[in-house]
Amino acid sequence: MTTSKALVPAGPVVDCLSKSCPDCGLVMTFPRQRGPYAVGEGFTVCCDPCAARRIQTAERRDRIAALTQRFQALLGRGLVTEELRSAAFHASNSAVEARNPEAWAMARRWRATRNLYVHGPTGVGKSYLARCCLNRVFQQGQAVAEVSARRFAKISDTFAEGGGLFSTWIRTEVLLLDDIDKANWSVDRVGALWELLDARASARRWSIVTGNVSPRELLDVLRERSVGHGLRNNAMADATLERLRPCVTLCLEGESLRSLVTDSPE
Ligand SMILES: [Zn+2]
Image (cartoon, rainbow, N blue to C red):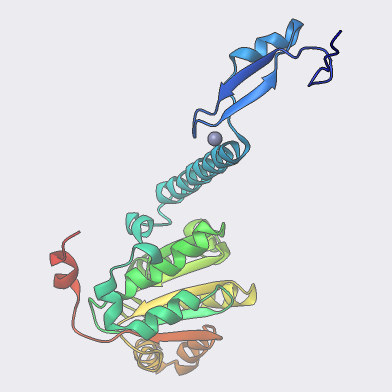
């Protein structure tokens, strides 16, 4: 008489179901469910790492959709330009950056904890650099707006006190004021600029300013234009510039890069 020993302890036979992860093909085995849970057999099952990746992708997609929606809302209200959408540090032109590597490095380090003043000749990429900074804070969730100084000055002639665009420019967390020296400043318009910068500074909201002139030269421009009733009001111009402190100043140098940017292959 021979005795045989079972190699595997006897137990209930488990009916298994195999499924492969649709993303990486990993085969996973599950105990087959009975009754109402059997309906799960038809479901697609991802492995844990692939499921985590899918969730990440979905979150990224939702984040981009939310950003796009916020951007469209600002665009619809005339608070930003189309140019802001494509201005981003990760997509900036390396030939443009190579002309002013230090200024670009400083711009990358700039955080909305102080103002930013970017100056230099026409066509060296001031507005693009400024928009890269503005776009970054926008993507981080802050309220932003941009306006050319020319448009600001024109609109400032007619705005009802405290209303409309002017109050939005005051309230927005980060404001880009582009081409500060290109506006046709007058004593009243400098007064409006002071009002804007004073209200923003009081609330510790930061501004990005671009111009062809240095802050010192801008002061002279504003002083020259602050003439009312035959009197020059230097104090108004001085107070306006004072409201831009504390400020990081970046100077971009070199020839106009517009032809370079246009000619470079994508
Ligand atoms: Zn997988």
